[in-house]
Image (cartoon, rainbow, N blue to C red; front, side, top):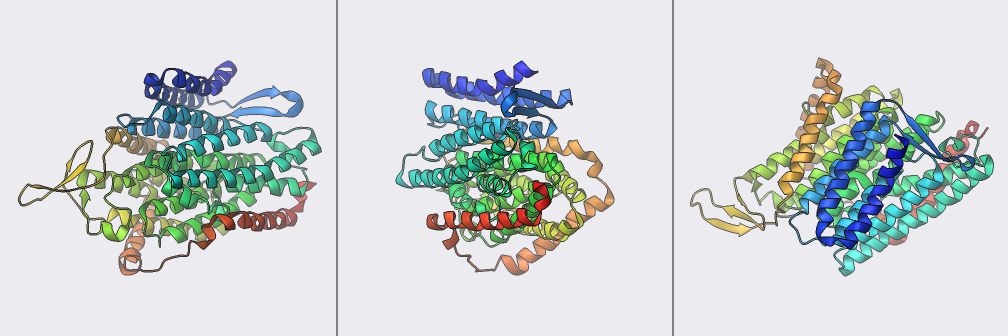
Length: 502
């Protein structure tokens, strides 16, 4: 398994190089690589025995592969395959597929790293590959969005690298376990870098603009898997070190509430999905022991929702109330929205039950509020008007129900759209069987009550709401200032938990 792991980790970068040399095979090789990752993830589940690989013993450079890694790797494989299929008949060049598979490989690497220096390398490669995909259209705005992302990411990684060096100075090892006994400033700096990279709490306010303004398939990858590269190490450290667990849980709760607070009031579909991503990352962090399964569910849901949002006739929820969408697209939208709301028969239900069962007493009320807010936010999608339309690969044409005549055209439908939906939504249905023990009367009644209350609140309050939250704090010149605030907060949190440094 050791040799297979090393070969699997290096293969995406080799495949990316081959795609550059053989551009006509780009999409085939990219899809094959995603399937290889899916097979590797399934092998992890079949083995059911953790694997530790020591690469450089004197420096603590280690790879750790276990069930937690398996969930995240499987998420990456399914989302990457769906995005590649979505783009199959488009005009995407070999460069796009090359960067997609390099991004895929570097994200996979973060899911098996157990030391700070190899994680740093993987996160930096992710930054470059993500920037190139964000800037792929070569428009002035896409380049600016990409540079903004790259600058924020690299600044965060600079803080992180300083913290990693301090950990090595204390233990002569970069292993995650070195956080125990490390200087307080090292812990604060490393956590700051990961919180920013993972889009957590106010550190993640760079995320809404980046995810909402990227191309549809790129948005799906960013929210589905890329953002989890910063969250995974936090989950891993929380599981390894009991002193880190309450810090991660605290930011999980704070993130869930912050993200959902923005999502319920947002009028733009892609920005609402981006804020929901922030909130859902909070659920992953709130109960680290089951964070892997929740990450899988969220990755499938959010990728599907971003791909669907890309074919809606408008990004404005108010305009969508007067522009019926095709019933088939609406059904896909409802399935994904039901899952993320925690409706039974979909994996989102099991993920939320698992999370609730592993919360600490002080987390329960706040996370139930976040779950209620999530259901309110996605009621905006569920109750959109719909009717039967004629769908073509190159366009969506409205058909008048009375005359049968074709009318206004809508957004372009990619040829691989339904293949992507089959994988993502099929995954939500299949993963529902992973935790069949969740189906008890109490577990079923609670989410249904929360959803019912959320829908009532949506119709009575939020559907008519005209409140618009300021976007000033998302401006580029404020993002670094937010990092400074977060660093002060982290110093205070770590200081109050000073036994961690003993």
